[in-house]
Length: 466
Ligand code: NAP
Image 1 (spheres, rainbow, N blue to C red):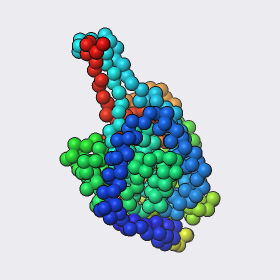
Image 2 (cartoon, rainbow, N blue to C red):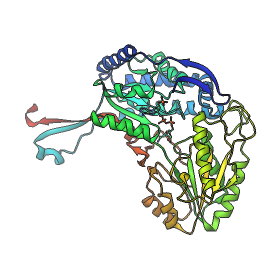
Image 3 (cartoon, rainbow, N blue to C red):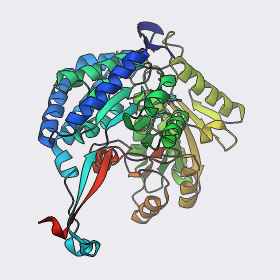
Image 4 (spheres, helix red, strand yellow):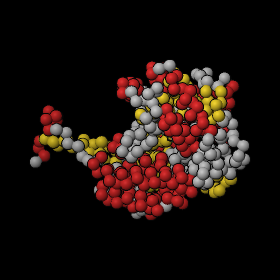
């Protein structure tokens, strides 16, 4: 895949980049390792100052970087602005909270005296240089939600971003440099995916995080496993959205539309499978389909647009094949099921609702990465939970019910990293984010996220210390 900005609204190549030469990669690896040796000794207030400055710069850059993102991957401009603002919020949150999240722990003396210790301290020390392999769908947010805590913990970062968002990738490196970080703290590697293995195997890289598809995750995790290096994987999802009889069906249907088409339908935590109890299925389907049909598809730079193009031509082709397979096996399109008549150029796809989906169809078990929903009718709670779990993925879920007993069952039995009641899944700096099953492992955000790339060190002091 060439490293280039190709506008998905037009198909036009805006700017191409040459991949780094081996000597450039070597230079950056060496600089990351050298910088780590000094940066790891800085204190948290100094790191917080740097991150706070980077947040202020990003806040000031909101409009130009939002336009860059929209040009590179097609999200509506308002959503791109919101993404930049969310990054600023997360950076400020980690700058403010890293001190308490990484504070030394002091196990109670009574618990450790039989180890012979006079005292014990558990300290969160940085791991080293962390390689981040990132996707294009939230080109700023995916990077910041890893990099802000990783830098606060004292690590240095190498970013291998998706090949179709190089301008955002270059912007990120410049942002951290302008904020005053030493040059080796955050570096972008403009390289293709084939060059990842060599970087990952380099002894100067301590760990890796990958957000992206299952094949990419499997490959990076296998190499890291071979090298015995820590990884965090944030992979795909096919989140269920369950509507039970006690729910506010109108609110559920309105939220369902947003939850499915956010980011032009290309979000790992987008609700993708809509499971409604038979008592409310008809009303939910009618309202949901109406909402999907009413969406404005068009130029993502236009303020009226709700759904822009898919990010890549390949992505649209994959989605079309998934829908075609379902229709050929007996599914019905309640709306959409094809490209829109307009715009004529660009990689657009009509918001689509498919009913009559069953396990013979690929879309039942694969992730639909675009504005395509499937709806299912279920007779009761047990079937709803079974269907919600009938997927290789386990990222998050949304359940609409006012029944406390029902909530307790869903909270216990849904196999996913999140269960959001009467609302849609959304990430937040203070809440852990990540998946189960084939959606990956490890967590981002919150205290869990910042500790993923720490060396949790036991400092044991014998009685003779004085
Ligand atoms: P992708 O094709 O897996 O690409 C993600 C990143 O991995 C890119 O930087 C890509 O580089 C690189 N890559 C691809 N194959 C690789 C390999 N074999 N070895 C090393 N690196 C490799 O995924 P995408 O199409 O950009 O993103 C969509 C997927 O990401 C969806 O499945 C979505 O659900 C998932 N996602 C998950 C989360 C989460 O938090 N769980 C968040 C967002 C997206 P190139 O661009 O150079 O190929």
